[in-house]
Length: 342
Image (cartoon, rainbow, N blue to C red; front, side, top):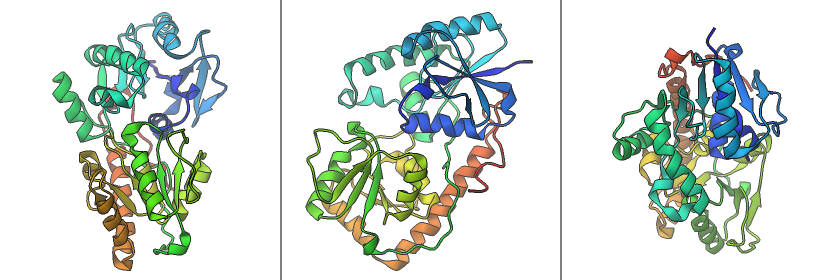
């Protein structure tokens, strides 16, 4: 029987948006017995949502992915596919199925380290050209790939990993904090929110790592949270903010909506695609526009409407994911029972 192996390099990495997408994808898969996650020896995880993890090789990182992973697959036979959920794949293997999140590394060279840029700019064109199947996570990213590489790829939308929480929630300034989720990558534009909230003297929780770029402030806190604690904080916040200048999808706002937390987000194309009329938008890098957006939350009618629209948006992506047949020809389908209970 044909098997589908999953590139498990992401299990050895810190969990950011790309890794969360991979984990959620594994959680949703049907017929998990047909999948095996292949991971380096340094990975101590034995299963991922019921999918067995097999440790192979002796190396780590890109060397493991580009050398030991394809060697193992060659010896396993020619009928097996390799599902790669985090942009990269072994270029020496001929049956790759690859999720390309976005092409941010081609957009602005200041967003990434020199080594990261070189690796991605070398590997991604080869992967796109020679893989059996490429897919992406939004119409925006699909258009970016088509514009740059002149190929049309299908979309498999992400979904929130959190169950919808219909508990009633109202705007209450005593809740006393807003929240944003993201790494220190400049395209996340966290510095704009830091400077804005520093001047506004409003409380902001930044979920992610701090850095020397951010001076200490009594009203701004940095935390690194696991999923359980993130869910609690998202549920308790007045609203989730995102000031990103570029995204392939941006999953944390969708997760916030599933918990009844409204959104105030930057007006960029992918946000308009994903969140439509379920969010309040502000002009990119405009403090005055951000202030106007925050003021709208004080209207009980608008606040309640955002929560309702948010739940509707989460359900839309649940259905988009479950009804998607893009990868069915490889035996990759999704479980209709996911996200039904907490």
